[in-house]
Image: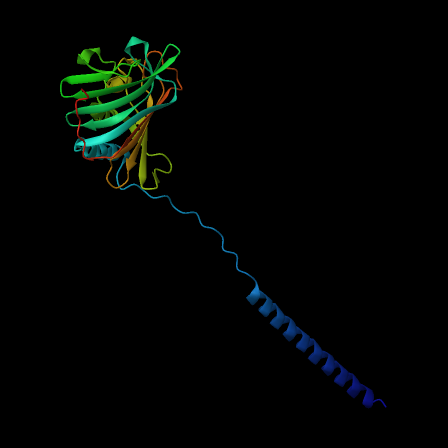
Length: 252
């Protein structure tokens, strides 16, 4: 009897060990299969914003060179806040048209008192024609009598690009093939846009350039430029249709 029990116990222990080993193997296999089938979570990685191939001052200089070579372009001046004061009590809200080497064709919307008026003007060399804001009839006028006599978009663009101070890139300067440069300009630079200026003012400017050609797409001028501007006055100049064929004709 004493010899049988140890054998039985040994057999029972052996069986128990085999069962334990088998369970461990199955458990490990299950864990392996489970880990193989678990979905892999991909963590998003931050992308590095594109780096401009030139410095901000170099980009402005390239833009000036590109704009100087143009034969024509379309421009539009709007105001996100405020207006531009013209002679004769006109408050200009919008102006736009085509600029060519021999002149410009302009449309403008302004307010005088409580009345809104629409004015057209054509300048060819030394001649200027303008519509009567009340009747819409064309007449030739001395250039100095035009409320837009100071307006020179070609000079304006060259002056802004030539006088931009402290040009820098914002944190993310390249977006949708457009390069953004910020800086400041003396208000006196804007005389070809607004006429009378505050000689001591230095408003902020944001330039939007084509990232490949460096042509100037947009200028945003924020702050005081004219004596009666407030600090939130915002002028937006949009430029387009570069070097499209333009033919200016006398209206009468």
